[in-house]
Image (cartoon, rainbow, N blue to C red; front, side):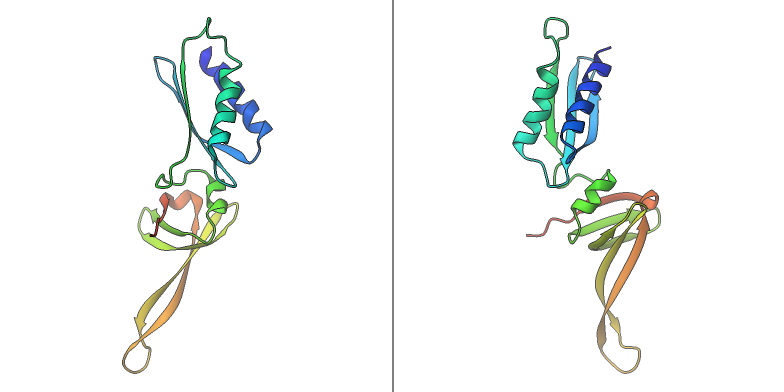
Length: 153
């Protein structure tokens, strides 16, 4: 089956390049192959070309009519793979769980959860005025509904 051939070639390419990992893979009914990758150090055009060639050069065009698109995960795309969190340490994230929203700096990404830190202005415990307080939240991956990197200009 065509999908299995493409999947095997894709997996072989990713074994060859362990710094790259799969975000999304789909094949439409008209054999349009769409692959989205990311990398521990980002993704260059050459990385997309490497994956594309690994697939395209190993499938007989006489046997299978297909189109192929390999792209990197966009800057505004939600994080879907745990490896993406490690790559985005020290960046601002917007994380949504079922009950709350957090916006803060990603300071830690373990096998089970992430840690976000942020500062807020709160009334002083005694007296008038406000004081800046550092807050922190540990969020388990399974509790994350959506997480996006906040692009600041």
